[in-house]
Image (cartoon, rainbow, N blue to C red):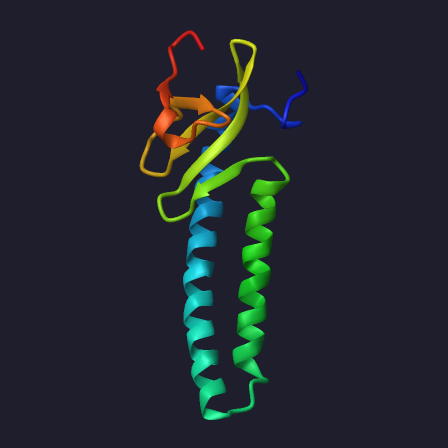
Length: 131
């Protein structure tokens, strides 16, 4: 049976990426929050009929570019963002010959869980020390 992902992480490879993943998530969350504020402001300006050029739009475009760059860091590694607010991330992996996700949440110190590709967070199982 063909695999759905080209890249599969060992637990050690995923662990080694966690410091960088934390940085990418933080930047993504901050940028998303900035974007929401900027879009609210731009929406207010549109209602009043103001010209929407200049620095407001430039900041909005720069924020979109930062979000795109951050998302690309995950995309190019085939790391899945499942819940941005919780910092829930899945790394494709092979365990016992099956394609699964190593599941990590930002509040967790280590990657300690996995689940099938289709079960999601509710199907999380603890990784045994031998895995």
